[in-house]
Image (cartoon, rainbow, N blue to C red):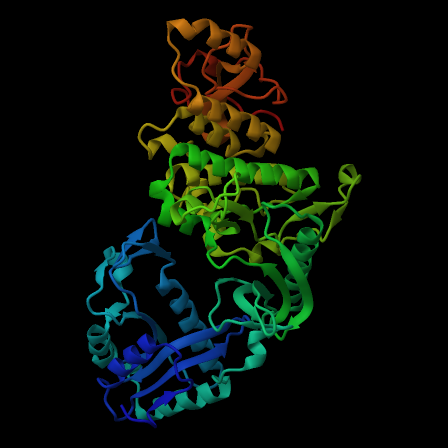
Length: 579
């Protein structure tokens, strides 16, 4: 295809991308209705600046193509694509089809608004033909090599009514001109920082970019909040409030376990407010970290990461700040450069004892000091707040998040519980919140040991105590979560005791004053029975798998369920407790 029909909006700065585009271009016809545009951006109605590698108009339709110059092999693990490089490294990627599909829909909407009624399909093209693609069948739809892509583009439409003619192609070209697909440096600048052309991450109402200072050797992360074009005033106000809420919370709460806010620009970008954060170039999200390094982590290392998160949330709660939406994507993992002896760590060691930082505070709740009893709140979240959460956070969110005035402490305890499940198993608790709710309502609590052979039941007890379906059944505070976590740590680190150690072990147990379950009591809301907790006698059992802190609510009166020998033996046998 020659110039005129092929439009290079911007020359690629990457050799591999130019080679991939040239390989496709040489195989496309230079006749009507064929046309193509490479390397351009457009601004969606949501305010997101979207980058497109290639858009092709063919007789069979309009196609958006994302180019990937990956080498080695690619597989899928729990929905995450993992690239195994020739050098032996594992690099996790979010499924690129998800984002390119979203971009294709957004562009199709803009084309229709400007007179071109065209459906835009989405494809991913691997430019290295030697890449070993071992994706499951459902992930291979829309994935091609260069030759396979060209073959797909040449196919006739499935329905002749959707055939693209030369007048249709001219209408698409005119609509693209009206949409505006030229690059604009103004859209890639916030204060003295120049944003990368491709975003690090995106959400429904925001986008994160890596950015470099124009004069200083400084790299930061910039979050731009996006006021959707054409949206009503309430949604635009909610976007502004989310940005102010996150800036206010992070400006007041400084902690090593929380992302560090540098600056807040209420009018820093044409699309909306901007927040500027410190940024480590190797930062991974928690789910990405587990996909890449999880097979090198032992259970003690995983539990240590749970403790980091819980201690950060305890500090937040002591400052009357509640995150409310903890999820894998809201935890950043940063390799530790030095150990406590100030020795420089190697690559693997740095990742096996990383620092965790909690991000995404846009729907956090902050109560004013001394006014908790009166419910005073700063920048209080509203019913619209959930629109600022990404879809992939959905499986981690507490069932009552969108209810009227949910308990923020209980929301965070639930979040710690599901993140403990993720860290223990390497797997998300469910594919969606709907799936998670159906499991809880059916009495199928989260049990990490069901996925990981040999995992201590103490961890099951902790996860279930934190993620009970009804908030009043959960651990009441993060302090209680940490006390129960300490029991898990003790069980994992205490060696097996022999006869010679019996007296010592018994003395240790007496000092700990452990707790134990006194009987089985039905939890009808979760469709199962669970342990009700009461103080142990002076000679407490040596295992802390069933430990529970003293501040926990008193056990309810005996019920007919108490005759059942196990929690699963008597589902739905008791009336609901009064709230």
